[in-house]
Length: 419
Length: 165
Image (cartoon, rainbow over all chains, first blue to last red):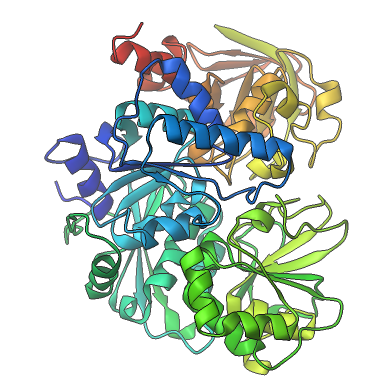
C-alpha cells in the first residue's frame, strides 16, 4: 500500500515493509532528548525501571535550556540532577550552560538529527526536526524514561494532511507567517494526531531556518509531526553540520491524505496571532492599534541566525520606543558568536534592546522577561495561551521577527514595511 | 473498575499552561504541583475538588506543552478520570503512561454540566449521569492502552519486557 513520508520512516524503524494509519508499531529510536523540566521526572522513572545504563550513550541528549542559567534554587536542584545523571551514565550529548542552546536550535546545529531518523523528545516542539526529513515528535517524561532504557517506543501510525506550498513569499513574509496562516486556517486541533507534510515548488523559496520554524509549530495545530521532503538545501545543511549516515525517504505519489491544502505563499501577508490561541490570526493589515509593553525575539521557533539578521536590519541605527522592553535571545552559543562577529549585538544594544544568552525563559513565563498584570507582549515564540508569559491577565501576540522588531520601534504592533 | 464523583466542567482547548502554569515547573513533586492545578482558569478548583471527582471538557483537552506535570497535577489533585471530546496527543500518551484514565465521548461532553454526579465504567466505556438520569457511551479504551494500564503504567510494562519484574 502507498505510504506517506512519515509512514515510510516509521515502517522502516519498526522492521516492517509497510504500515497503515492507526496501526500500532514499536520503533527503534535514533535519538531521545530531554530538558531541565522534563528530564528530572524522566530520570526518577528511569531509576524505577532498574536498568543500569541508557541504551546508547551517544543517542541520549540532555539539554538544560528552560530555566537556565538557573533561575532559582528549585531549578538549580533539577539541573544538578540532570548533570549528575549525565555524568554517571556517561551521556555524550549533555550541554553545560556555556555551550548550551535552546534544544530545537541546538540539535540540528550539532548535526545530531539527519534525514530518515526517528527522534523522540520530552518536549512538544521536538517536531522541529521534521524540517530535516526526520520523523520527530514530542512525548512525555515517562516516554523518555522508557526510551532511554530500551531505545524503542510505541507509536500509533498517523494519517496525514498535505500542504502544497506554491509561489514566492513577498518581502517581510517568512516561515513564521506561513505557519501562522496555516494554523489560522485549520485551527489548533486541525491536525490532531496527524502528520503535516509540507511539499510543493514553493519550498525552494524557504530556507532551512524557515522550514525549522514551520515544522516547529506543527504541534500548535495539534500535529503529531511536521515533515519536509529532503532537497538540495536539506543536504547542504546536513553536509555542513553532520557526519552521521542518513536515509532519504520520499512519500509515494499515490499516498493517501485526509486533506490537501494549496497555499499560495505569494498572497500571504505578515501575520499575527492574537491572544489566547495561535489560531486567532489576523494579517498585519487587520491588526488595528495594539500598544505593547514588551518585545521578545528568540525561542526554538525564531531564535536562529536569519531571525536575528532580519531583526537587526530593522533596528540598526534606530531606537526602540520609550518605555518598551525589548529582549533578544539567540538560539545557541554558535548563533550568539555569529551575531557578535556580524556586529548585530552592537546594533541591538545601541537600539536599546537587551541581548541575553540562549534560554527558553520568557517563552513559557519561566524567567528573563515575565509580564505583569495587564501587560502585552509581541513575541516571536510559539504559544499565546492564558498566562503563558506571566500574569494570567497578561497578553501575548505571536509574530515574525520582522513584525516584532518593527513593533519595538513604534511601541505598537507594526507592519515592517512601514518603519 | 469505576470512577464516581462530582464534575468540574471546562470548554475547548484547555491547555497545559493553565492545567499547571510553567512558573510552578521548578517542582516535580505531585502534591506541590496539585496545589496550583487549574489555577489560571479556575482559582477555586483546588479548594473544591474531592478525591474521586471527574473533569469533563470539550475538544483538544491538554493541548500545548509535553509537560507530564499536567496529568500528574490532575491525578494528584484527586481527579479519578477525565472525559473530553478529544485530547491533544501528548497529553493522551502522558495520561496513560502515568495511570490517569481518560475517555473520549462527544455526547457526555455536550450534556454533562458542572456539578453533575457521574459514574464511569472503564471496562465498558459507559458513563452514567446520576444528576440527569442519562447515560452515554464513550469510545472504549483501546486494547494496547489497557495493556499499559493493566501493567500499572509504561514503567512497569517496560520492567516486564526487560525481564526485571
